[in-house]
Length: 501
Image (cartoon, rainbow, N blue to C red; front, side, top):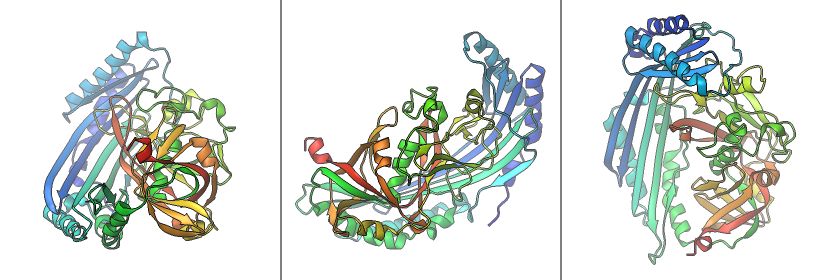
């Protein structure tokens, strides 16, 4: 269903505010200036055992001005939406640039971008989640919670729902002006219980990912009825499952788990600001450095990974980024070799890349845009098997389902991941759950061990509402599409033994 940008946001004098700020920045000598006016509305609902624990509504509304003056960045924000505030923000941004000039070692240049005048983009959704009465949301979450609680092995159940509706207006001195609106939701359920003898406590969460969709996703976009009916049985089996024997196994990794490995070991590693060392304090740099572009063997010939800010219902999907760049899709890894990076206009210009691929984003009108992750996705094999077909080819292995904890070093190279549930594979068949499992590898070892990927029917879009980066910290939503995949000879740790339990 096609939607228009919210009338309340359009009632703000967006054009006149931007014109005032841009003209003042031009008069003060800015070579580049852009203005963002944003409204971000959110609601978070949480329940425990079917009872409402909390509900919070928030709104952030403001404008900001970013400039380049004599090759130096300047930035300022304002919470007041008036012509005077817009002009003052422009003056402050220019003043910041001039004060910063003596300590600036590198002059700012931006990759060129065509002008996009008076463009509008709205994400694909049916129902605005913030238009649904809170009572209806609580009733739905409570009903689903009670059904999970009916299982004998479930002692408690937590439920939550995050919703965001974001409007953004952008204009710059070159003549680009864009107005955008996007919607996203994040439903979550988790069952908690103890083993029959009381010695083990654990949980089992829904596999439903957050999505760039509306209320319709919460009601009919995921088969919650079937999944939640099975959640208690999965938890009961996990609580009584034998602990894993550490060693080397073949793994079939479900997309509900693999998306997070992609995010941490490929998504962050191919952000060019990390690869160049400009982003280091928050979660490190990258082993995939610029000098290895075109030569780094990232993985096997089955590894084909794209960056894409146009993926349907992707959390990072948008029409234009916060540099005024029209978004697009491109290759990051092709046939196992590193061939590209995620860039914004600044990092593109640094390395002589003709055009940004649209990866600038700020999570607030009070924050400066930084280079952020696209929807980074692993391509399926057009003629690949289904998940059962991948499992059928494994004689001694483990099937990994759902994401949980992870650890990765500051260069995105050494890592280990756990999951929601693990099933032993014996002679091509699932042979019950095991517990205390973590898989460990280096990034290139792991992706180099990828022996097969599933077909299009196995692809799922996972992701996170709040990927962290930058200082001050910013959060960004991002999705990752991937099929099931087979990895051979992967190290498996017993997490209980590793922790001394």
